[in-house]
Length: 446
Ligand SMILES: CC(C)(COP(=O)(O)OP(=O)(O)OC[C@H]1O[C@@H](n2cnc3c(N)ncnc32)[C@H](O)[C@@H]1OP(=O)(O)O)[C@@H](O)C(=O)NCCC(=O)NCCS
Image (tube, rainbow, N blue to C red; front, side):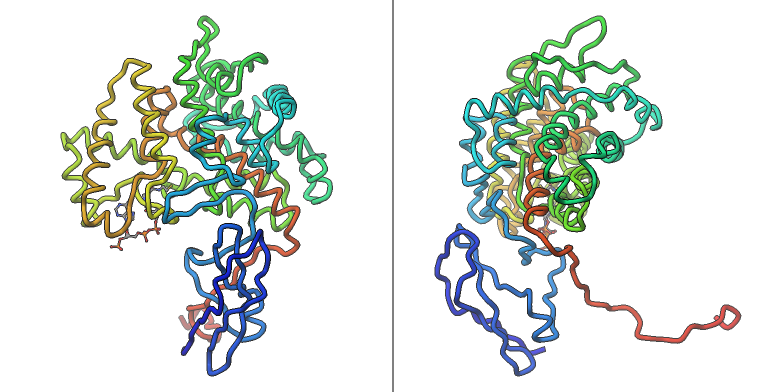
């Protein structure tokens, strides 16, 4: 195939305007013009929506690394510069001045809330923490050692069954209930996560405490016992709030794209986030934070200071979990913030964790090593978050559940954006590489 893409302009546009100028693609001796789309931050894209109809060609982009699947107003990442912003606000400022619930509001509704809006939002989240009593039966239906992500995904869909008026798969109706569904999901995902933990520990479920803030309530539902109330250490609760805030949204990652994909077919918000939970489960996505702890524990157990492991990672025998990112080719800004939080939490708890020392050594070694430098592999948010979650007492196989609680605002916001703007079902093409047409062979002749 002879092809050439020529871009005719790089002017900066505003919002999601479609720039009047075009690029041209010459293929098979014929030229096709492709409109240029320029995002708010100057990101440029070639609009290939009509390409197949006009040329017979589609774009092949395994893994979608060069594909913009939507126009979105929610989050912005500049992976080369290590920038993450939600609705325009830098993550560093949000981490310093805001809270998870406030950032959830921002991500979902597009603006920072007024004091009154925030108070009302908090109140609605607080008032939605309970689960229907029949929900206990769902937990009893799972084997006690079920993976908490499997439980969470099922429970998200089960939840929708208790609110059929909010999960109709009729866009207008589901959008009309959006505010209620939102606070319900933000609140109950945390109750379900805590109940899953209690079930697995063989302990009674804890009812939520109306007066507690979001994270304190979660810690209470997780760790209070009938004979002893859990007293959260403020630094621990703050670190958990920060963890959730840092995970609130992250552009078109695997789970968020999944939510949008499911939403594009018209599925309700409960079903869409249930799919998001499944997508998040994998070790290359949300499962990475638990994989980091497993890796650090293995390194510790074999008496390695990290240097042997670095060599293994370079030869492909191992993968340095918590390093590298599809989009960030620089420090993940969340990793910087959370690396500092890990130190604070361990200090507040008066604990030393040899895994933190190994993590620090791995980071230093990798950042000075040509293999990692050339490939632009830097620590991502998962590199330190596992150490904090472990210090808080969250079991390793629940780390991804914590990620899901944090990512809920992003999934919700992306569902809303899709439901409000997408008319067409998301349906990529493929390039078929299987056998050509052949005739059926009767079984006795095979
Ligand atoms: C996140 C991740 C899936 C991104 O993958 P990607 O964008 O497809 O990057 P690639 O797999 O193309 O990697 C590019 C090169 O870096 C290497 N590489 C990427 N991540 C690496 C890691 N964590 N350790 C060692 N080498 C790594 C690849 O082997 C490849 O090397 P090559 O060019 O010699 O073949 C990948 O970096 C990874 O697996 N990281 C560990 C898991 C993790 O922390 N995930 C959480 C993400 S928030």
